[in-house]
Length: 343
Image (tube, rainbow, N blue to C red; front, side, top):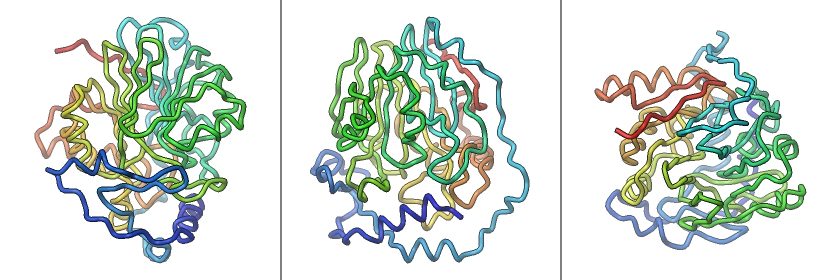
């Protein structure tokens, strides 16, 4: 049973309905910069989240058209994480699984939505983490996109080095401080913070938030731009497709975009909150990034499609649209990819 989504739907059902807000057009970027609530009550000003608990129940009683009896084929590369302790003379990404990357740039390491734990509330991890949690150096820092259990994992936070710095969206700082993690910075959309040579910028995403100890949309959700001065890394977090990608692409020259491609079926229910592979590729083109790295597949079984299907669909999309497959990276868990020098 998809208990994670069930609990999320319960939180959704308990929240009061919001006023319907006109959807944002591709030409109108103003809602990206407008009011979007406050701690305790956030929203996406360009488009409301209209799903209800009845939509969730409709999904649960509907027939899944996918055959998930076959064991998924998710590639894994053995990696002891030792390279994270050294120096990377350019930039590299190691896929830990799901939405977690270890990005190694020069002498620095940062993690995205770090999750090394055995489960996301109740859904169990299908593939082991790509590197051992113990290999993460104390000098590392992390960005967190939102509080859903497959992206914010208490098991992981409690076991990572306590001196690590954390960058989180509005409302999440106290959760970290309550666990003894004092080096935490909260940011709103379009706000930036400096961390050594890095500029860390919080950016809009089309999603929502809920956690057992926090109300629905009580804390913000976001994407991140992490800029070393030499390379810019865009981490989309969890998001549906929306015109914000084009605006972000206009504002920033991005080297690599980490974009979610999984947990997308059925589309009538998931479209708002999760991109499918075609939408993720469209987002990549909107961003104008040099490279796309696919994520959010192969680790947790959260929706109808098999967890190994999204990269196959993405490869077909790139081929159909005559895209450059060298610009779209589909990594194995544990794989380390060095970002090529600038063209």
